[in-house]
Length: 287
Image: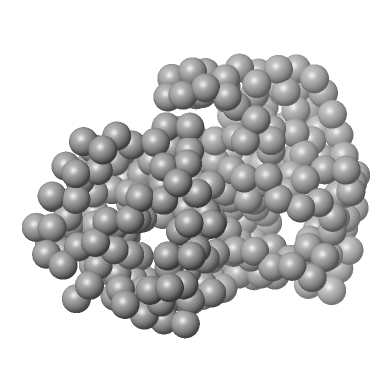
């Protein structure tokens, strides 16, 4: 069984060659027929995967949340869809937490080495006729740009992220929104809107026990408040998610959607939940 270990080198914290070789050596204990591909950017990874479409039964990807989101959307365009393994990279690692794969590179590596494939659900957003899938997170408004505007490496990027969050929290804002779901239209104001496929956002658990195996996406529409809506999350019953399989949401057109930590398009959006889309190595068992 041919297996590919694809490593993203394009983020703020690219792994060293020593790290890659050490990880590959451990992976070869379970996957002897292992090929390593070092990807400097999305274009190089796309070219390689299209060229070798159908050759790899399993692809193990290492990279940050945004890089994994791009990889995920690329995988869904292949003629033959492989089983996926994910190794944590980047700064926050919310994908690994939200998907129950681990909180560190070591833990996610153990998951790939000892886990078994399980079908995962994905969310999708469609804006202007273009659809994109997201692994765990989609947001718009206050705080939604922090992940791709934060600068620096390792500690300093994390520091920049949380410092920017503090500045955003004290600059009070509110945006008009329009939500359409279940043949109803709801309007109001929010500092931000957030859609989750899992429990984590911004490095914190904010959505109880929600997992990518549930029946719906979770939509948060916090009312304007102290700390621009974050105050509600200190009291779990103050901001309860709306759970839907599909819905439409509109906010001002000058705001951009953030998908898994990466800036995307602006405009009214349609959301859908897709069941059993990818097979992913996990230690979580079916209930």
